[in-house]
Length: 46
Image (tube, rainbow, N blue to C red):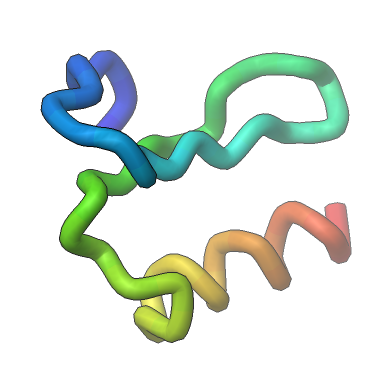
């Protein structure tokens, strides 16, 4: 979640159109994860 410190490479950070962090995902989260994809889709629509 937000405020998580990256522990390994491939840590994912979703940044909104306002330039602020929306959420973060650990390196073990796959880019194909439903939660990851749904959040990106939501941010694109906003």
